[in-house]
Length: 165
Image 1: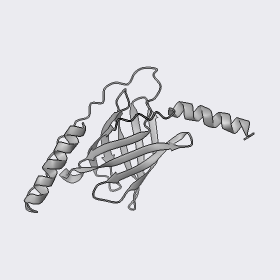
Image 2: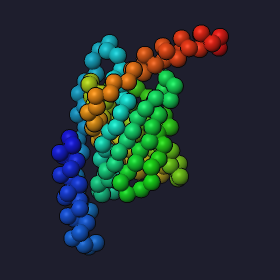
Image 3: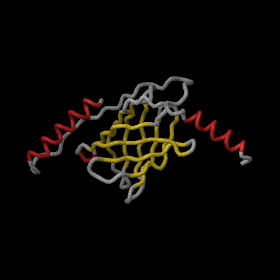
Image 4: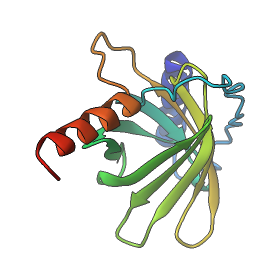
């Protein structure tokens, strides 16, 4: 996936330097994240992700960082060509993932599928005006292993009980 994104980045740079009269680059983004494992604990999304989305036929690359805010996920999305935005809400239901991204113009939504290993997601971005675009993201390898979301929720509940809340 990283080689794919790097290849598309080089191709995009070549098109960009060729002149403004060139047509938009067309990239086919397919979404086959595979099936969710029945009864398995939700994958841990914590980490850095490289993403590619294709709004109006123009590739847009960037870095998505997902971490914990208490027992819930939160983070940021930093496209290469625009300012970073906040991932306000991230929710999982089986292998389905839903994210709400705050932007100046209004919320942007992502609905997609997450691989069983939790290292790949793909789906559709819906802008505030209703336009939809494909998006894929690949999690960067890391030696750091944070607690899972379920483990964080248990820790949060235990801390709340211990403090009498």
